[in-house]
Amino acid sequence: MTTTKEHYWKYSLIVLILLLGCLIVAKLWMFVNGLLGAFTIFVLVRRQMIYLTEKLRLKKPFAASLILLEVAACIIVPVYFLMWVLLGKVQGVNIDISALAQTVRHFDELVREKLGYTLFNADIINAATGYLSKGIQVLVSQISGLFITTLTLVFLLYFMLVDYHGIERYIYDLLPFNDANRKNVASEIYRLVRSNAIGIPLLAVIQGMVAYAGYLVFGVPSAFLMAILTCFATIVPLVGTGIVWVPVVVYMALTGNWAGAAGLTVYSCVILINIDNFFRFILQKKLADTHPLITVFGVIFGIAVFGFWGVVFGPLLLSLFFLLINILKREYLEERR
Image (tube, rainbow, N blue to C red):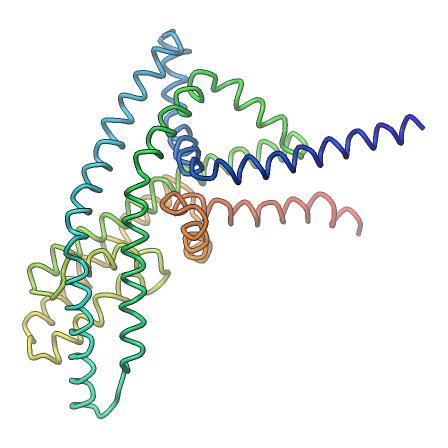
């Protein structure tokens, strides 16, 4: 009888926790991005906090305040500046999209005249233009919610830093694994967060900036919009930025701009591609070597669920999913053989 009551109490408690947890998440979902951002930055700066408090013997509130100033100077202020510039650019993006749609139509006409083949019909072009417009609307909504995200991030990050040992121990004890698997999962989380938080955005920004310089030099139409598309194209394995610059080169050649097409081809093959390979090689040595497919599908999944921070947490959750499968296979399925 006692065992039955204990089971009843235990499972009733689990159900109550799940119900309340779902209710809390549903009502506070607007703060999730701030929570994810705080956790991401916490992983990046926790070693500094340990050094300041355990090596230099600084008080935890003072050390946390110093790190928040560093985060503001190195991350928050630059992000706000970039968002401000981007918001100014977005006002003219609708015009760029119209120009881009006209460019695609012109490209289709050239291909039809020279090769006798139709690449795009009006429905495809209109649908693509609609998706780009929706993407811009999502971008604007992300920018408008940045203030709330920043306040949540700073508030949560401060308390994470002040009580970093207690929070880490609390989460560590809740993991449903033995000690070996707990250490494996914890180290994997930290490794993947550092990799995704630094590697993916850094590669995208570098590629976008290098591509934008080339687009401007060789007279690519809608250069800024093409550079943004190039940033997103960096996550695609194998082809990467070629998704953007190869069609641009073909278009420039068909319009008679052979010099620009040849110059952009050489620039992309010699500089753009090799910069991507060079920095990717360095980051893979320094950080986690995440499989390209996990990165691609993780980013798609993450952005759909979390918005901006999905770039970091989409691949993280996908990697953890396969890590948990491997733990299940190793700890339970293989033992039964």
